[in-house]
Structures are given as structure tokens and as C-alpha cells.
Length: 398
Image 1 (tube, rainbow, N blue to C red):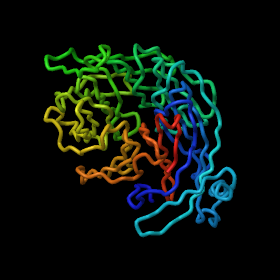
Image 2: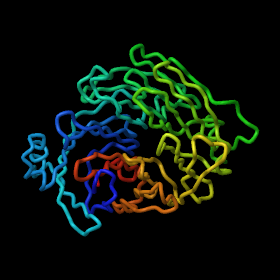
Image 3: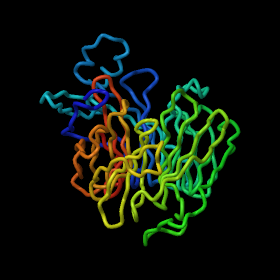
Image 4: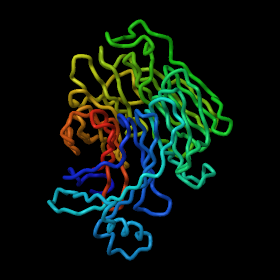
């Protein structure tokens, strides 16, 4: 399909890019500096390890391209033993053979507990004073690390935090925001010091818990961190966190001032339901995955300017709900990584319907899809899916 994935429905073959010893919880992709058809993949797992894998994508059209930039892509297309042939099926019934060559590069072993988040920097490596792509990881050990690909030693160690780091984002070449426990932390990379730590508002009378909610999750334990797109790099923006008491809390993020300011907290979005993940589709539209204890999982669409007014719309989700959102580049839709192993796409202009991009349990076993990332090629996109047990932490490509 094209860059927005509008004309790709599914692919009839898949393969394993990286295998962790346990579930894979997070995945992020960054283009390779020397080739538009190569990428760096960072995958994070239950085995306390971050794996770096180099990926090359090519098809028959690449092989005939005379452009020097496609030399590595053409080589990938003709690699026999290292390439996995994928068949991309488009809505006009045409088929195109795609070669995907992967090479495992290194394992990063600085975390001492499972690694649950990974996020590449949106800034060019030169803005960080680096040559390779920069990314940040967050772990259950309460630590975040900043890395330069493919070095095995981190640029910075940020922490410890009081709880698991369930959200990480690079909002400025020198500033990282982390969500851990019930707090949001802003870190200065150069000094490796927290410039601002903000706790949630005091518990309200209607703070809710479900019977299986651990005490340490009350009342504002953060499960995810969503950063709104800003008008310009490093300019002020919003951060939203779905929390254990059924609310979404929003902060103003001011990277240049190294400050965080609370903006608001929603009322309980759906009584008894736990928000699991969130993503900004635009600077004002926020999608939140909700998991009620008795089923009926759904996605709530919120207007960040009027959070007190409740959901603008709701989208039913498969049983078990959703673990992760990936927003299309143009903001036209969202890919959802679902508990049933599927990946589904929701169009923002028709939020009540879901299209299946990757069918449930494509491996024949019941395994949750924890995260999805996209390698954006000029002619087609490659989806990289992080699966949990019982697949022994396989990271599949589609």
C-alpha cells in the first residue's frame, strides 16, 4: 500500500524479525541514514533486553531503478537466504513480491527488569550531536535509558523512578518526558537530572477501583503517555496519560523552559472501565482505549479542548481490548494492536467501524499483539508487530 496504507488490506505471509525470551512489549522503527529502503528496528521485551535489528525492504520495481540511493534496496531484493518474501495484496487484486532482509545487530542489556517502552527521537541525529538514530527505553526497573544506534552503551541513564516507566518520549533533543507510577517526570539529558516532577491532582470522591486493582495503582497510576503534535519542533504541546482511576490527565509540556504544568483531568470516562492506552490523532483529538471489567471494550474519542464533556464518539473493540495505537502519518486513521492478536484500522471520519489489517491469531495460537510500528517505504509500508506469549516473544512482520 502507499504511505497512508489506504490501499493495503493484508498480506498473505509473515515472518519473524526478532525473537525475545518472553513477550515483546514495544517496538519502534527509524529510517537508516544512508538508504531510504533501510531501517533500524528497536524491540523491547520481557527478557530485560532491547534488540537492534537492521531491515532492508525492496521489490521488483526497486531492482530496476537506476537511482544510486536504491543500491542497497536492490541488493536486499536479491538476497536469497536472508530475505523473507512477502506478498502484498492490494484492493485492485494486483500482487507484488517484496523482499525483506533482516540482520540482528546487537542486544542492549542495561535494564535489570523487563523493558516495556521504546520510542525513537523525532529529531535528526545531528540535533542530538550524534551520528546514529537516537531512541529512549523505559523499564519495569524504574529506569529510562537514552541510546544512539547501534552503540551498546547508553548516552544517559534517567532515574530511578518510583515505579515502572510506562511512558517515554523525546520532546526536545535535550529533554525527555517519562511517566512512572502516578507522576510525570521531565529530564534534562545533559545533566541527567529531573527538572520537573509532577504528581496528579489529589484523589476525588468518585475515584474508582476495580476488584483486581493493586493498591499501588490508586488513584492515578499512569499506563501510557501520549504527546500531541506541535506546531514546530520543541514548541509547547500537550501530554495525556490514561490513569488507573478511570481518568485521563493532561499536562502542558514546555521543553524550552524544562517545565510541566497540569491542565486538567477528565471525569471518569466510563464507570468501572480502565483506560489502557492513548494517542493524539491531531493537536486536539485524543483516542483512549477503555477496558470495562465485564467486557464491552471500546475506544473513546475525546476533544482535548473540552475534556470535561466526555467522549465525542465510541468505537467497539475486539474482546480483550487494545494495547497500543499507531496514528497514520496524515492523521486519517489509527492502527490498533489488539489482545486477540489482530491489528485493526479505524478511520477518523468513520470512527464506528474497524477494518481488519492483520487477522486475529495469525500464528494459529492465542497471542496478544502488544504494539505495532511502521517502516514507511516509498511504495509500501511494512508493519512490525510485537506479540506476547505463547509465541515466546516473536516479533512478526507483515
